Length: 258
Image (cartoon, rainbow, N blue to C red; front, side, top):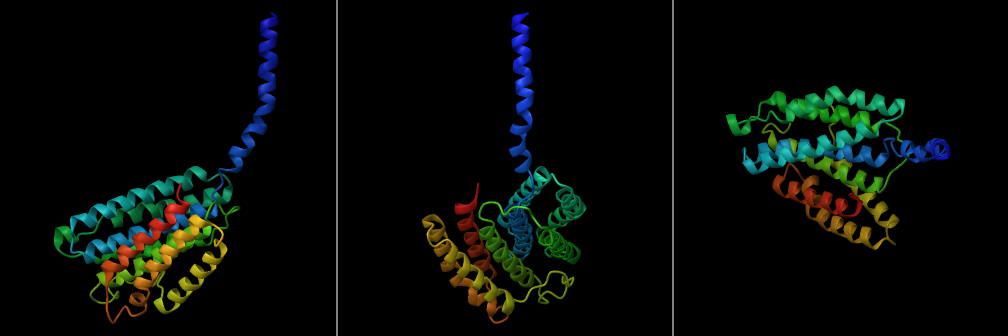
């Protein structure tokens, strides 16, 4: 009997402690701003790789790259689903869910390798749905920032510019055939905005050696393609924009990735 009593006393003590132990788990489950920024990054990366596949005339290497981007984006969407705990979190995920299914279906439907051209409806859906989901994420107010949210935001912004550049490069009509009017950006506005963001973040992390090295690399890569974005209609270089964007995102991931 004394053994059972001791067991019961121990069980009661454990039950009393459970709310305290569970509190940090619940608190950490909410969607934070870094996760929002990373999801936006993944949306624009899928869009960029979809159009790069077209630009490269169905080269299977870029088909595999698109498939990898879709897997990465799917993984990040699952992160949002798992993290959703509050009513607003759940509402965000639910609002995105149907759009997400349509987006991935459209991104997987590039016909360039099979038909020699990309059917415009798939490109239109990729462009439109990326913009719609990005807007859903942009209007969401996270309770916490998460680690390096500002650096992930910088990467997402760069990837968005790159995806716009590649969308225009992929369409012989300069975007007219696939333009849905949603989410369009102008490089004359976004390029100086990126300059400012980069300068602000470099100042913020000037005492962080690891972040400073990564931001120096980003500034260097940005210098190679900045004028290409500004002068898009004079000399289109989609391969360079795509490659250096990948390197800029990889530099962020070196610091902020987990």
